[in-house]
Length: 138
Image (cartoon, rainbow, N blue to C red; front, side, top):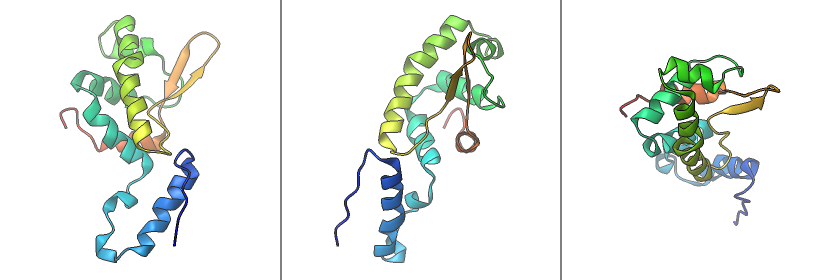
């Protein structure tokens, strides 16, 4: 049997991940197939970011909905808007991109939208749950 998987298509990758364990002995199937793409994404992201960026992510995780601004995040972190924006657009953005490339089909950390004046962000419930499994010092 042969399987052709388009690695750039998240649906194709998920289908392959779901199908392959059926052809392995039960004791050889690794638990990774049981882990959601969002959890795999956070697992990839966490070692790529330091403690300060983890604090940013953990604080952002506490916000409901999609109407959260970088200014609100900066205030809650007792930092400047400039420094939080630089962290999110710099180191965190690079780490997110690398983690997304490592986990095809992962939705990423933030959901962004422009309200006509500023960019607002939020997180999906699945990503929030994945972040809950991580500690600041993990």
